[in-house]
Image (cartoon, rainbow, N blue to C red; front, top):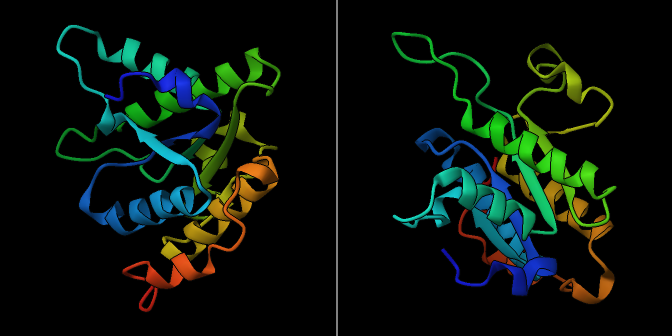
Length: 176
């Protein structure tokens, strides 16, 4: 875990997404969009400290990132017991609470879903928040994430022309 997340608070984006092989290309697109915008990605995988409870580390990370993006792709049960993966919804709820508690002055959130209307079934409280629909396309994730950051991040913090960087993105040529 980075020692002093608070020092970079205005330049960090907490990324909340599924950690599985099927999401890896979209994960790369999210991280790349953040870096292309001149910001620092932070995610739960970055957090480890044997002497701190995981929930404390998540609260610390989310509250010390001015922005967060949440992918809600894994909302169905999995495995023989049909268990749903709850870490992503918990982290999403923590970020929404932080944003609302600070009247969105200290935290801004974006939401991503694989299909345009699925989230209304499993997360009806998010109705009206207009999540970005990515259809499991890395190029859609990359462009939606970068465009959202352009809208919410002060212009002085943004890298003005990331197109050169996008051309260097390893999967850009074959991006779905």
